[in-house]
Structures are given as structure tokens and as C-alpha cells.
Length: 385
Image 1: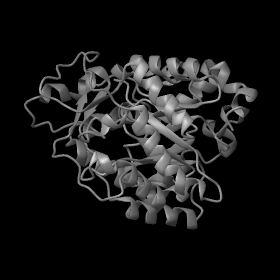
Image 2: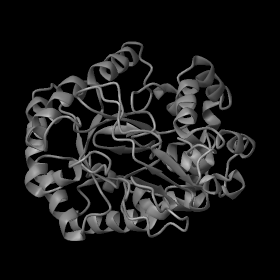
Image 3: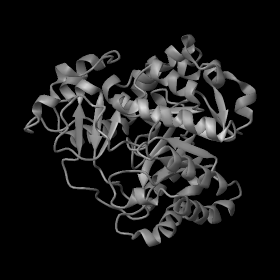
């Protein structure tokens, strides 16, 4: 997802020359051009190209020798939640809300893909413009509000992928509350989404932490978390193979509140947590953000999201599955997440600035010596299967 229109009065924020390095490979040349486009148009263009057979073929052709592909290097493979991941790097929810380009993301080298956020009901999201770049900070601010085609459309799309046996990596589906559904009916709304999508996923992420749906973050209490996860566990446990559930938390929670939600999720049967969503605290950004609202992602989110990740690992012990996301921009930041306690890591904003060559460049850095020791510990992995 690329910035907002160059016609905006805040156009100085969008100066491509300010975009931070590294941009990997040809992205150094392409990024300035794409950064001139309207944010959502550029995003839609990227997803459209990614959904084309040509884009998938080109990505695969660039790494036609599987034995030489760092994304399939044996030392990067890991097993978590009973699932085999060819490497620990995944694409975070938000980039492919409607599961349109799943095969492209896996062709880029990602070890897993999380699509969504999907809601039970189709919804347009918030008014535009709703995505803003902060190039000096390597960051994005978005106020999207879960625009998506709805659970039925996304389910049909994933069913086709499954029928054609096109999925080569684990697929996560991120589900959220439909905007028109009142908070008192949130648990039932999440359940409806799971009933349509759960069996198609390898794991499901429950999103109660986006800042862009009114009242959603109010669901981040121990009681609400237990109610929502409990409602999902009904149909989940009725499956022949119940799916691992993960709760996605906001970085803006106080430590005590984050721990309370985490413990409630684990008590309700979740396998673990995704840490973290975007932040509404813009203080770590150097760019003037006056007049902007939404969730901040990218480099300025790294410190808080990683601190929260470390806190949760220390509090929950080795049995909880933790996916670290927020400010993963290169191999060093990815390794720091693993060192802080992540079993798996994800990126989104990093892909905007680093480009399609980033996943394999990042994985090459991990394989070259930055991989956290705990990630290579087979006994530790086995404890979370």
C-alpha cells in the first residue's frame, strides 16, 4: 500500500527522495514512480498485478532452482502449531484483505500468508483518503476500517485455491467485527465469520485491536476476549481438526491490560497471540502528523511492539505461540523479533519500502547468522506443536 496523493497539501511528506533505504533490487527504480500514485490506487494495482498469472510466473522464474532458494533453506524451516513453515517470515494481514494474490506472496518467498481482515458482512471501510506515507520514518498511517468483500466472497476464493492445490505454505485468516454490528453482538458476528472461513484456514487470527473501527478496541478486555474466543471455539471444536486460534493485540494497551487479555485468550483455548497491531501513538514519528488519524505502522512501531512481545513471552512462558509484527524492515529487525520471543514474524510496511525482493534478502540475512538461537531450538518448537 503506497502513500497518499501527490496533490495533497501535505505533498512534502510524499517526496520519494526521502524514502529510506534499503530498497531491494529493481525496487530502487520502481518505488519513486509508484510513490507518485494515489495510495489505494497503487495498492490495488499491486494486488491486481500480484493476482495475475504472469506476476506469479515471473516471481517463480526468478528463483527457478529450488535447491538454491533461501526461502526453502532447511535451516530456516520451523514447525509451530502443528504446522510446517518453510521459513518464519509471513505477510501480515491488511495487505491482501480479500485473498486475491496468495500464490504471489508465496512465490515471493514468504513462509506463510495471513489474509484479511475479513468481516462477516461486506463493507466499504472508511472514507478516502485513508492511507498516508511517512517516508522519512519508513512508516504508514492507515484508517482503512476493514474494507473487504465479506466472508462469503473470500471463502469462495480460498475454496478455489484449495481445490486447485495451489497453497504451498500455511494460510492464516484474520477476522474482525462488522462495523454495523453492535458491540453487544460482537461474539456472534465473529462466530459467523469463523463458521464460513475457519475450515479453510490453517490458523485463524481474531482481530480486536484495529484502531479504525469504532468501538473495536473496547473489546480488548478479559471478559470480552473470553466471550469472543468462546463463541468461536464452539464451531472450531466441531471441526474434524480444530484450527489454532490467535488473538491480535494493540501496542497501545497498558502492560497489565495486555497481559490480562493474553491470559484470557490462552484460558479460552487460543494457541497464542499476534503482537502487535498498529498504534495510535504517533510520538515516535519524526514527520509532522498533524491532521492525520488512524494506525501507525513501520519503523516507529518497532520499539513498543517488540517490548510488548518480550513482555508477553516472559509472562506466558515457552508454551504460547507468538507472532511478532511491527517495524520488521530488514534482517536485523526480524532477528530482534525472534530474539524477543517470536516464533514467527510478519511484515507489511517493510514490503512497501523494501519491495518484492525484500523477503528473500531478509531471509538471507537470517540464514547468514542473524537467526535467533531460540528459533533453531527444536525442543522449544516442539513444545508449541
